Image 1 (cartoon, rainbow, N blue to C red):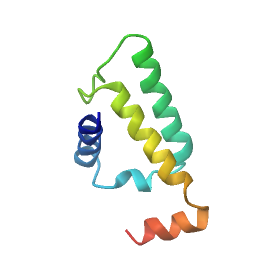
Image 2: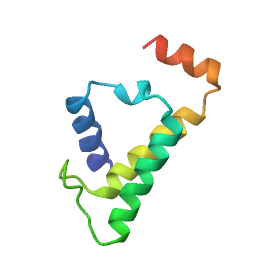
Image 3: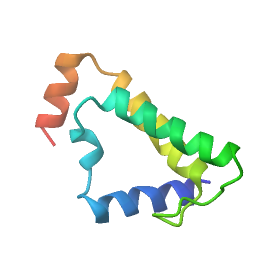
Image 4: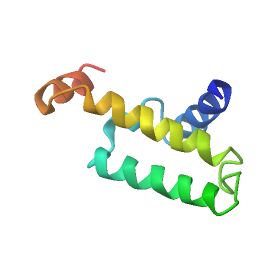
Length: 85
């Protein structure tokens, strides 16, 4: 499962840029929405995301990790964190 998540992260880094997930505006809403889309696609029987070729649940798991990482910081600490990257 972890290898699949690494594939998702690599796909995102190549499509956008490394660590770009930290710079997404309204990240809590957007990653929650993306997680839901991947979960629903999987629930409806589609295992593989057509754009990336990677399992929908790996995408959803990455979204949850992004949400958790984001949620561990206050707004001020998050701004300091991403500006130091």
